[in-house]
Image (cartoon, rainbow, N blue to C red; front, top):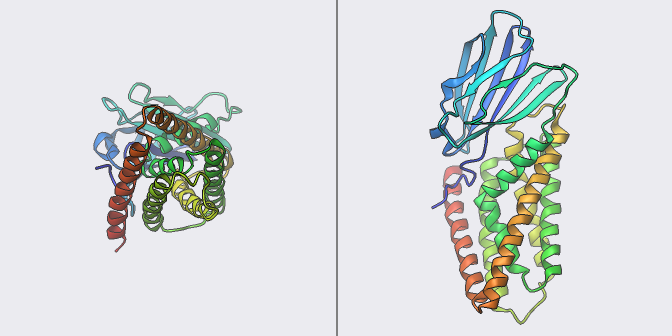
Length: 314
C-alpha cells in the first residue's frame, strides 16, 4: 500500500544562507523513505565546523534539520562537499542565499558537490530546477495522480470535456498555490491532506457513476464546481511542499511559477497517458471494466489515506 505521505521519494530540501563572512546557516527537510536513505551527518562545508545542530519533526512526519557552520576564515567561494547521497537514488534541492545572490541546483549521488563562488554578478534563481521539482512532485504524488485519474475517467466521452475539467482543476489549484506561497497563508497541512484524500473518494464515486451512465455523454453542470473546490484543496497541498523550501523573497515568484509549470507539465502528461490507455481499452472492448476498476482502486487508496490522515489529526 502506498505511503500515506504520498510523496515518499520527492527531493529533500536544503537551504544554506550566508549570515556573515564566517558564519552560515543551513536548513534541511527530508520526508518519507528518504529518511532511511540519506546520511544526515554528511552535509559538509569545506573548512567549516558545525557549531550547532538541531533535529525536529513536522506534523506530516518529515525530519527538519538545522546547522550553524563557523568558518575559520572568510570564504569567498563556499564549497559543499556532500549531502549524504552516496550510494542512493535520492536527490536534494539545494538553494543558497548570500545577499542578493542565489543559486539553486539539484544534487544527486553522482553530482553531490557544488562551489558557491564564482562571478558575484551571476544570479541563478533556479527556474529550471523548480520546473523539474514540480514535475517530480506531481509524478511521485500518488494522491494527486489518483484524483487526476478520476477526472480523466469522468470526462473521457469528449476531448473538449476533458480539457474543461482539467483546466478547471488547474486554475483552482494554481490560485491557492499562489495565494498560500505569496501571502504566507497558514493552513494545517494534516487537515488539507485529509481533505485531499476525501476528494479522491468523492471523485472516484462520481467517475464510477459517469461510466455506468455512459449514455449521458455530457457531464452534469454541478461537476465543475466540485472539481474547482477540490482543485483549491490540492493547491494548498502543493503550497505546503513549496513553502517548506524556506524561499527567499528574491526567488519566490520565480520558484512559484517554475514549480507550478512543472506540476502542470506532469499532470498533462499523466492525463494524456491515462487517456491513451483508455482509448486502447475501448478498441478491445474493455474500456468500461478498465475505468470502473481504475476508479475503484483510486477510491480505495483515497479511503486508506483518509482514515490514516484523520487518525494522525486526532
